Length: 189
Image 1 (cartoon, rainbow, N blue to C red):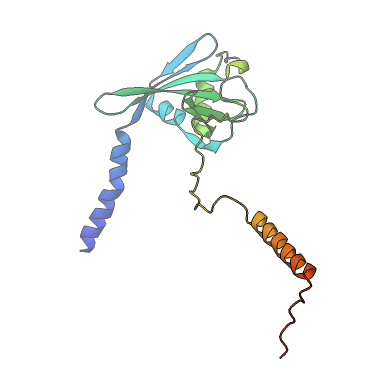
Image 2: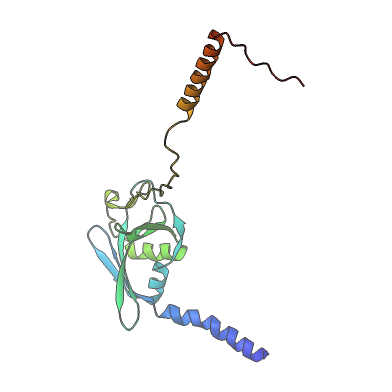
């Protein structure tokens, strides 16, 4: 029983590794202002895909490089993903304008590899870097809370009725006094 449990644990730990191999980077193209460089080196590609925790975007643009990462998905199918590297800020940006950008810190291995690939390559202008500054918020739809139905209470205030009743009581009292009828006395106990 103990051997079976050990085999199951070892097998389960290998399952995610097999799944991870199904998606792997196969090519990266790093472009500057006038030239591009490409790599298919597996070690370089693994370093280039490393990113740290999410960060807020830089407050303003800086010199940057455009990266197109090609990933093999399964059965030879490939997808490309745009990335921006901002060496002076130590940040990389994934995503696009339509879906939104995600900024992350660059790992030390990725920074080394990007420096190697961009050496002598003129960066793109800071003014062309998108997704910097305060995040833009887009509102697609405004949903107001549902208005609760109210019970029909006549819709009028009771104050006019109360005031009218007091006026009638006052008039009745005045009539009783005018006719000379005595006011009723409270009961003695």
